[in-house]
Structures are given as C-alpha cells and as structure tokens.
Amino acid sequence: MKRLLITGASGFLGRRTAAFYHEAYDVFAPARTELDITDRGHVYEVFRQFQPHCVIHCAAVSELDKCEKDPEGSWPVNVDGSRNMAAAAAEFSAKCLLCGSDQVYLGNGRKGPHSEEEPIAPPTVYGVEKKTAEKECLAVNPDCVILRLSWMYDTRTLFPQEHGDFFRTLASRLQSAAPLSYPIHDIRGLTDVNEVIRNFENALELKGGIYNFGSPNHMNTYETVRAMFTALGWDPHRLSKNEEDFAENPRDISMDLRRSSDGGIEFSSTLDALVRNGRTLSS
Image 1 (cartoon, rainbow, N blue to C red):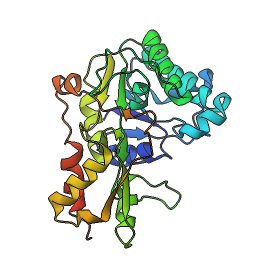
Image 2 (cartoon, rainbow, N blue to C red):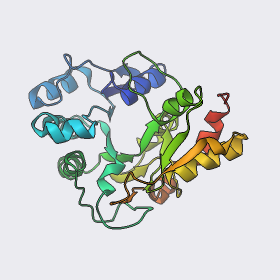
Image 3 (cartoon, helix red, strand yellow):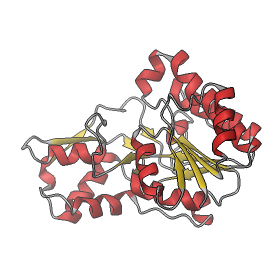
Image 4 (cartoon, helix red, strand yellow):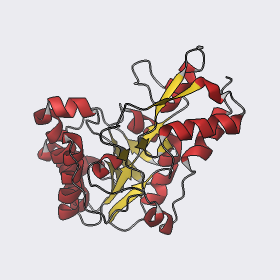
C-alpha cells in the first residue's frame, strides 16, 4: 500500500481528503504539532520517518483578511512551508501536489477564462504569496504539480467549527423568507470539493507544472444561482442582483480547464454540480 502524506488535515479540504483516501492508502495526516511545515528540518525528519510515496499539501492560511493583516504570520506558511514540502518531496522521491488558488488571476487586466500561461500580478497579499509559492516550489522541485483551485463547497458540515461556504450558506438561507442577493460583477468557478478530492489521484499522474483545477463557469454569481433555481423549479423571484460588490473593479477569475482536461481530469460545470447537489435540498 502506498504511503500518502496530507498536510492541513484539520482544515476544510485536508480533513475531507484524508477521510476519502484512508482505505486506499496508508495515510499520515499529521496535526500541526506533529509537522511544522515552516521548519525545514522538521519537515525533512517527518519525510525521513514516514517515507511517503506521494504528498497532498493542503495546509495554508487562506483567509484573505488574515493575510492582509498579518503577512508575517501567513508568509511562512503559504510560501516557506510550501517550498519546504516541495523540496522534501524532491529529496525523498515523493510525488507532490500543492494546492494553489484562482486568486492569482486577480488584477491581471484580462477577462476569463484564464489560462496558466497568462502573466499574473495579484494585488492581494494572499495572491502574492500563492504566486511566489508556485515559483519557489517549481524551482526546488520541477516535478511538483501545482493545482489552482477555485472556491470550493460541500453539502456536509463535518465539525461544528467549520466555516460556511457558498452551498451551505445558500441552503441555510433557503429556510427563511428573506430575499437572496448575489453579485453581478463577479465571475468565478464554484466547485464541489468532493470532485476536487476524487481528481487528486489522477493529478498525481500529471507531469510537473501548474494546472487550473476546478469547475468551469462563464456566468456571474447572480446568473449562476438564477440558472440553478430555474433548473430545479425553484422560485427565481426570491433572487435579487447585488450591483454594488465588485462594481468598481469587476472580478473575473474563471479558469480555462483545457490543460487539466488534456491530462485526463474532468470536472462538472459549476451549474451542473450545483443543480445535482441542489436536488438534495427542499426550497
């Protein structure tokens, strides 16, 4: 049985990844006290002891506000920690997946869908950290696979402290009679996290480089939710347009998935997955 090391196992993505693969792999999903990714020596010692065949690096400080307020706290995790994991994977011949973000496409002045070859100049601390991590990880380990993930959601809450996401927030709001407002100046993919996790295994077979990794979507958020409501036979009159958010700087961080698709990886469209999951709800 292959040994799989998963970081960030107390978080939204890492916890679900560890649960999904625990039967097919010998999984080691250490707590922060067991693996300090910011400490290069500690990382190498864990690799030396566990000898992983493959690594899925999910650990990150992903809250944008937290990165803006405390870059001295987020940089060691998002950049130094990622580089340490990539370098150790190269040293111990383990295939390494690193979780990046669609946030790197912010501010590049182009409309989506964005491709991996585009020049990027993210204006946020988080985006800069993710961009820097990509460059430094590939420098120390050209075989590592960097996955630019979109905004993910699940239909399930696994533990009480877990933050909300798009789908579960929508499900909660459906229980009230309040109008539902969504921005018209925001275009991005929304991805069922379970599709991401299932596709990790195929991503381990990709050659090193950067890949957009998530559900495609060409509609703004309001259009997406309205199309979902229409497909499910729900009352679209409950929806209203949020015309203020992103009005001064419209956001389009939708991604071109052709490179991942050429590697044999497929995702449902944002709308198809939302409709499929929406059938589990009652409105």
